[in-house]
Each structure stands twice: as structure tokens, then as C-alpha cells.
Amino acid sequence: MPSSPPAPDAALQAERGERIAKFLARAGVASRRDAEQMIAAGRVTLNGAPVTHPATFVTGADAVLVDGKPVGVERTRLFRYHKPVGLVTTHRDPEGRPTVFARLPAGLPRLISVGRLDLTSEGLLLLTNDGELARRLELPSNGWLRRYRVRVHGQPEPAALARLARGVTVDGIAYGPIEAVLDATKGDNAWLSMTLREGRNREIRRVLAYLGFRVSRLIRLAYGPFQLGTLPRGAVAEVPPKVVREQLG
Image (cartoon, rainbow, N blue to C red; front, side, top):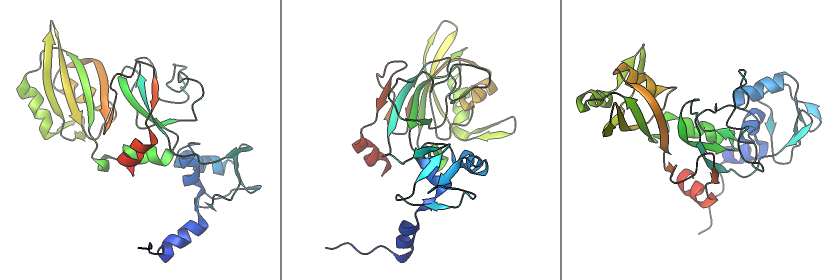
């Protein structure tokens, strides 16, 4: 059966393209907000003319340059990275600390992270060359679970951990339900398995401190359907395009 013709509004959208700030974000150049700042600074040109407004539309036939260098949208790529402790998840750090992106193997495209892991956290970090995809995967509305293995100093009681399943408010911030299970104890330390959906900044450390426990190690094992698995520390592995299509559409 022949496919139906696209709706008029879809056809019009395809004809005029997409906003340049979104285009630059998809190309991995910068976030939409940073792209707007680049446009305001006169760093972006379209077909030889400076772009003056972030709502300017571009198509695949247009020539977009940033700082005089051409920008194109490659196919969307997604990578798993085993982040070690001691790296910050940023391209540039004002304090001069080593960054994730400075330590990546050579030959990769320009990548941005899906969310972050802080300096002392380790484990699975998703990286992509598509800024719009990164933004989409970070949305709590996806309902994707983030799984962690956490070592704390102390011996948490199951009843205390069960409080997290109802959500808690710490320093005026309401955290959603967190599943926390005691896996093992050794000496003065305990290992927990924790699962949450939002993954706010330092969420696990803050809710466990609220219960009176200090985190001494935090490893992310999974982000939605993507697993850390046996990926060696510091290594990068591309998610096969077929898997990306199946999981993300």
C-alpha cells in the first residue's frame, strides 16, 4: 500500500529546515543556549552572511560556518564510556582539573555527555555527537532507570533504606523514589544497589548523607537500557547503530 503524503505542516517544515540553534546543537557544536551566545557574538555565518537571530532556519543545502569552519550534521552516534575517578565531565575546567574529554582516545568525533558524573564518581557515562539526543535522554520524562553500586561507611538498616522508596526532601529539594538494597557488609563499610529515575546533581550522596551515611565509592552500572558491563576503565565503545535505532527510534 503506498504511503500517505506528508501533512502540509510537515512538508512545510521539511522545506524550510530547522532553527540554526537546534542545528548547531544536533551537530554537537554546542548546546542551544551556547549556540545562541555564539550567534550573538557574530561567530556563525549562513551562506556567507552573519547570522543575527537564533530562529534563522537552515536546510541541508545551506553552508553553515562557526569561526570560519564548516559545520555539518553527521549521523547520530552514541558511545559508552567507563569514566574513572578524578575526571570532571566538562570540556574545559576553570580549575585546571583533568577532564573526561581530554582523556578520550584519539579519532572520535566531537562528543558531549548525556548528563554527568562528578569528580569522585565512576562508571557508565553516555557520550554522543548529537546535542538534541543528549538533551532528550536527560529528560526525567523518559522514565529511564539509572542503576548504581554504592559503598558507604556504616551499616544501613533496611528500614532506613526503605524510607527512600517514598521520596525524601533534603535542604528543600524533593527527591523522587529511590530503590536502595543492602547487598553486603564488610568491616565498617556496606555495599548498596540503588536505582533512581531522575539522577539530580549529587542525588545519591545527598540522600544517603540525609540518612547519616557517607559515600566512599559510587559506580554507575546502567543508564536506561545501556549497561557498563565489562567495559574496561577509561575505555570507549560505540553502541551499534541498530541498537540505537531499536532503543531510541
